Image (cartoon, rainbow over all chains, first blue to last red; front, side):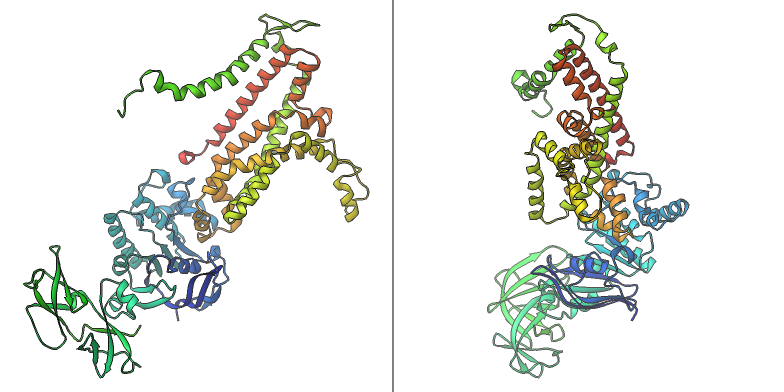
Length: 352
Length: 286
């Protein structure tokens, strides 16, 4: 299979486990995000791929070739570091040309490529500038241009946008995504920002605090069909209802039976499950309602931020959050009796 | 208050302190030396107040020129050796875990507690024919018979570098430990081998620190007085030896003062030139 394969990767630092049981296939030409909370081992995984660390166990393959023991400087990857790691003693042009100089390219070739790359990151004419004269966003672009100078086989980014302010970060996200689509280079970005991951990637790899990969899929797959409670909770907000599987398509949640559309394979009647429902999939109706998949409760809080309205319900001890658009605003206020309707299609049953 | 000029004596007190220290311990002694360098020597006595440039005119002898050139050469040579050996040494220390770094630095600092006399005699024994390392080489079969390496040029170089080396490491340690560890890693992902990385990125980005250390070691070893006499032959005696000789054994203080002033001016000029050369490249040094 063309692309990057991680085979049973484990990485320990002394007694600390940084990554375990990682098996991944990253298809050629895709934009992949490693997403997870801090300390989940996503940066370690990226450094293993870059060759800056050796795995304690497992192999790494690129285009079916084992690269596990290849040192970093022979891999022809481009990497952008969180600190950017621009060389302070070199000019912008010399920074970008560094990888070309190391490969003994002629001065004319270097100059041509530097100008080409500066055009690509929309900083023409900056070759003679010193790094200290650049703004944060410009340094970002130079670091990206430097990593792309040799047309890398893999483009690796370690939270490069985290130091930028919110507005600039969103601009850079779009720009980086469009750049990657134009160049078609296989890209891996490490981030803890799920919005960033959803914006940019073809595929998201969700890692947990247990240093394992929990799920890999397209952004929408991961949002709509989280593999477990960790993913459901980490990606966006989710209502997690603990219950017991009753057989058929029914799950009992605190004395109430909910119908669901999809039941995970291999589940036995009587086992404990969690139902995950996204807030925007919950319909709130005013007053006392009875019916299928309806939980009766009281409104505890209404958060109206204009573009969306969140309603917090207390349904006999279960906290439920619903989100609706201004058009679909239910006519309820704090303290009112209301009902939450959970459609069977929106209820995702999780076993772990 | 911000932007207001400090008023009164109280506001100037913090600046006054270093100013007084400089005046008492540096400006006044140097002034006395400068004054004495223009006085006349009184044979059999001390000196008489005068203003003559005879002392300076008498400097231009072959002996003085040769000793001055050698003093500057041996200090520069030792500075180069110390930085060439000390820079990689310090770099590897800064890459160690914190605990190991402390152990290495403590060992280095403990070397500083040895006086120059002990160091010089230790080296002279170690390089001697009777008990020196050449006996060890003979035992290993590397040499035919033990030889004496002390006194001599290389014995002097060893002794001076040994004294200056801990200072070199201590001066290089802060800038090297502040070096972003991602810089060498970035160079490696860009295709530079570890050796290329070391020279283009680690040495390159610390150019100003290296120049500053060269100057520090140079100035530090210029004043060596004891080591050349123990580990060097008479032709290896530095200007400090000559000055001491003149001042104490010939009690020609005015001439010794003139030599000192001239020596200082020449070394200051050299330090200035080195700093200019170090600034050669771009504002990255700021």
